[in-house]
Image (tube, rainbow, N blue to C red; front, side):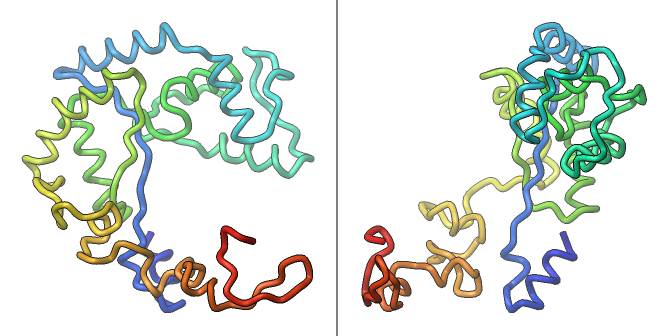
Length: 229
């Protein structure tokens, strides 16, 4: 993250305004036993075919041609499959202890139980420790907490995790800009309701497009709004 911010600053952008969010799908319980029971229940009902379908959608690789319980060896002559093979070979979950070779069945379970981002099992304190380490070591700005069950996963975050994060000072008690927009609160900058001027996308706002010559069916026109092109 720090390297990305440095590159942005070298290009004239304020690196601190770049926000990095990591995805995580935690299984939480008041005790480790309760958390493990939630994982076991999800595992029992996991749809591995659906998980493999999701993986195929992400990668463009037809997983139906691979036997479920054979070690997954992709076609390394295909650059796309070679990249995925390397990714699976290096993939390590934050609390992953399974060192068995990847099979389509194991991959299907992984996709069905949190996808290719970490899905740790533990108490709220254990999950908070992981979140804290990512913030301290990787300079993460926030987290996209994906659900396993609805509304159960969200209820666990609200009732179990947030109190621990708040106690540790890792989550705000109020908005930085009360009544403000999402962007104002994300950047903690009152009045910043649109892209900052140092953001490349700001050059494509309505006012800029309105005064920029554009070609419409081969004819240059001035003052054409983007929704008219």
